[in-house]
Image 1 (cartoon, one colour):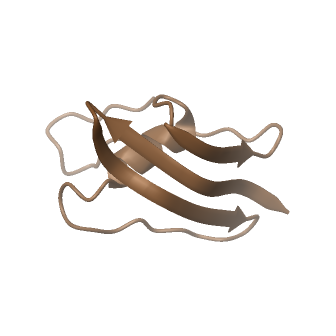
Image 2 (cartoon, rainbow, N blue to C red):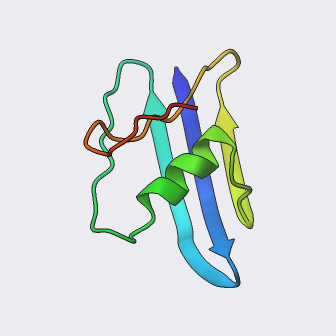
Image 3 (cartoon, helix red, strand yellow):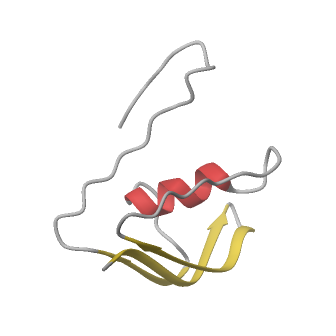
Length: 82
């Protein structure tokens, strides 16, 4: 069962392309890690996935009843979850 699927996702912030043509599918039981250098769009992708950021283009489908949230890293001075 596909829990999350993303097709052709683009995210622009202040006229600048942050994410371009992202494709992703997460199936039930999979463990996913998002890694990359600072400024590469990891947080932007997660914000688009949880719905706190509206994509400029593309399809994002969440399975019915799927509960998602985002928690700042334990290494930051404050830990905030949404």
